[in-house]
Length: 106
Image (cartoon, rainbow, N blue to C red; front, side):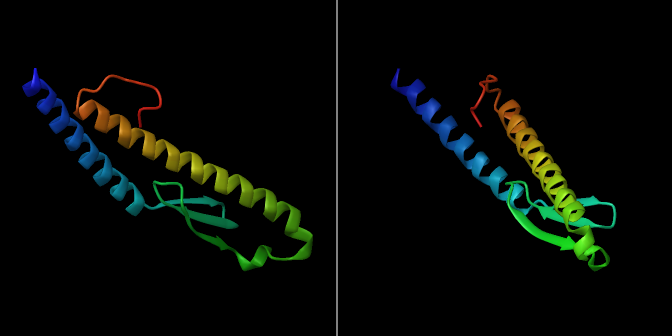
């Protein structure tokens, strides 16, 4: 019985190590989302916004409301792509270890 427990603990350590490696890889992933030539958002695989670039041609008072709407939409799109990348990476990790699909596990 203790031998089986040792095997389980070894597998848990291995999974934790792979999760840490995957998280580090996601931290280094770069996703760029643009809204035409108006806004570019750069985000990583851990939903950290790394940069926002605005086209100076649109930085006029009369464009402010439109620019704000485009910026919100672009950031939300970038976050959605980052979450998807993260979820795919964790799903692949679970498949690699033949773990059951448990909602909220990763």
